[in-house]
Amino acid sequence: MYGIYVPRGKAISSGNDASKVFREIGCNRCVLKAQVLAGGRGKGGGIQFINTPEEAQACAAGMLGSYLTTHQTGQTGIKVNYLLVEEALSIQRELYLAITIDRSLRTPILIVSSEGGVEIEEIAKKTPDKIVKEPIDVFLGILSFQLRRIASRLDISGALSIKFNNLITNLFHIFVKNDCSLLEINPLVVTEDEELCALDAKIDVDDNALYRHPEFQEFIQNQDLSPPEALAKKYKLSYISLDGNIGCLVNGAGLAMATMDIIKFHGGEPANFLDVGGDASLEQVTQAFKIILSDPKVKAILINIFGGIMKCDIIASGIIQAVKEVGIHIPLVVRLEGTNVDRAKKILHDSGLPILSAKDMEEAASLVVKISR
Image 1 (cartoon, rainbow, N blue to C red):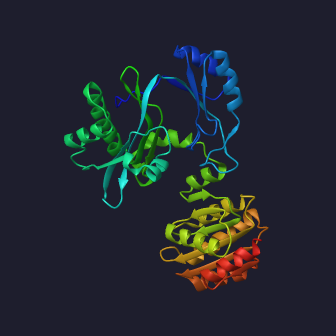
Image 2: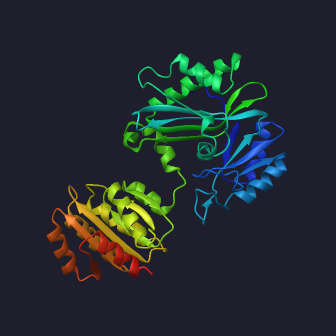
Image 3: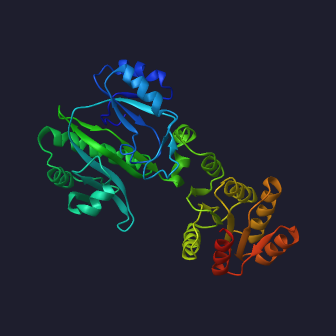
């Protein structure tokens, strides 16, 4: 659709399909790529080269259903439910290419490097001179002199430079048309027959613009999400599971970060980042509470709410409703401040639930860390 060359391949969910796809592709060598939402797959064993259909079937059977662990998955890893069977190309060299938003410049920015195929963060740390950045005018797009400058830095010339310019122009079109916050190709390879090919890509779409893209719904439904993540997405909650043992229910990303910081300051470890937002409904609060309670790692819960638009009594009612539905077997510390806080405290007091109230964040964090041990 956008004229970007990618290897021939097909996703499978059964090991028995690997040999069939290998034959359909009709090449001498293929790659099996684990389809999980994490980077670093190669180092974790999620990328395997295979030479025969029989080898493809045996390798796929071993990978499907296993848990892939990388530096982005946590210790438990992510279950591999899908594999991409893809032709292996003859590669001259690997490049890095991305378009994202530069918040300080308030504009899209193109990032390229001659060191593709590895973690760009490591390149930025060890050899920052190998990273080239070009701001892009959102109305005019990337200009000719910028394309020439980038091609020169990547040592791309002749007919290949025309392909490279077309590729970047098309990528920026994708970026704008789909409301992307990140569009990354790593590696972008130059093949032995002088083609530019995207071997792997990552696309992030601004969540606030998803309502303009109903065509993405099928991809969202097929995302490899855990049950808590799926429930959080269903109720429009911001939820990220972490490795600690203190569940956090907070409103507002800034307060969530501050809550995690103060928990760590007192020697504790947050089990999650869960932001119910500034105007959550009773149902959202109830579901958020259920998500935290479903995590077996959680040994105590801290609810830290500053009620502006969000009303504290709504939070209090949500807590009570959730506890009545699923029960609670771990300590619960609540710090409320803001709109309707007195009404909220009365609701919690009259409920008869074993809730520990804190007068401020300092006391709340200290208390929850102590009882989580």
